[in-house]
Image (cartoon, rainbow, N blue to C red; front, side, top):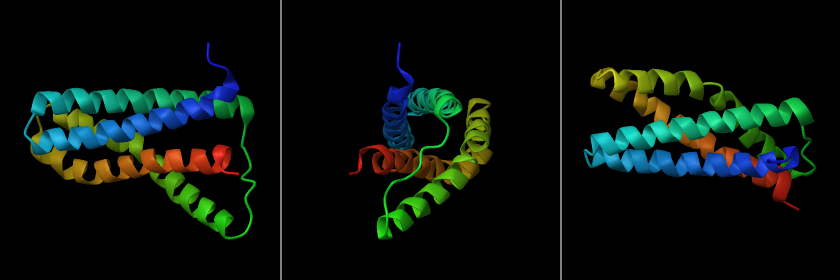
Length: 139
């Protein structure tokens, strides 16, 4: 069983894993490996879904964790956090719509929304790791 205090590290790992899977999925589709792309992107979605569950459990139990940094690094942290949070709210609906269109074989609309979904989802995954590092690991 994973302890509540371990969930931030688990969440960062899930975000990093999702980021790697997203890049891999992009490479696969550029190579026209459609079946492999589908598998990797579904795995990225599952990984991000597990992240969301762990994130909600953690914050339900712990609440908000204040950032301890001061000065310029505080401004940098909140700039990253605010963009991360706003864009993170868009990822679930964008990912669901994108996956739905791809799985239904509606490839033109899938491509159109994927051009938005991929960079947003990737940004949120990477900045999730950065926020974790700044909040829990940075001295």
